[in-house]
Picture 1 (cartoon, rainbow, N blue to C red):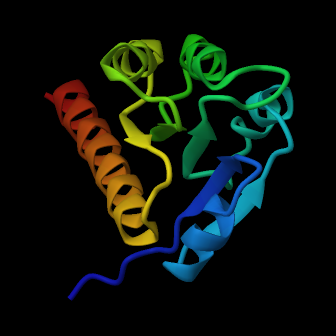
Picture 2 (cartoon, rainbow, N blue to C red):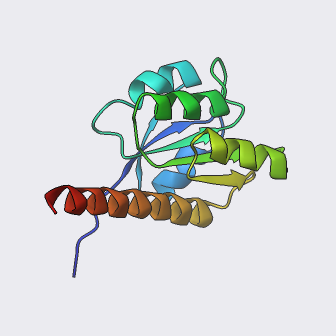
Length: 133
């Protein structure tokens, strides 16, 4: 049986998201705004990002764009309260791996972060295998 590592999630949300993630077994680090989160996302201890679309200073969509433009492939789950189809598509096009409509259930958030992390891990493994071939 494989022992799963504890993921450290950078949370950019003024609400209860970090507490929900801790309740599901994640370690969390909180950023007060998108500008600070952009710098923190480059830290090696960060395994995933959970971002409120309405993050202050640097909004969630722009934060996703900048994280991806920097070459960072961390899993990103974006959340928004006013999340119609257009907003969700914009978030995914900006670089998010998933988009959840708030309020978010803690168990669903856990599952979505884990799924995004698994997908990124599998992609990295495929790239490594292709490079060796």
